[in-house]
Length: 55
Image (cartoon, rainbow, N blue to C red):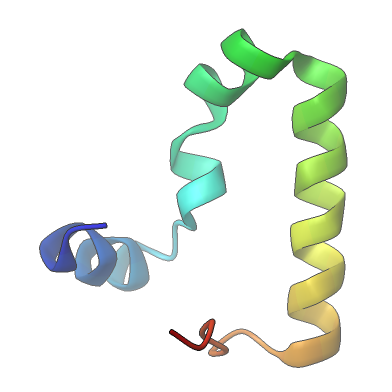
């Protein structure tokens, strides 16, 4: 992922899965996207908003 996109997303409060909702839904379907959204929201609720995956 490019750093400027990451920084802009943080500034605007838009997560990557939210930004890519259209393409992800088109490719995997609405039901799959809804499950992804629930999983992301549960993760953020448990681990917090500012968590980052370890490289």
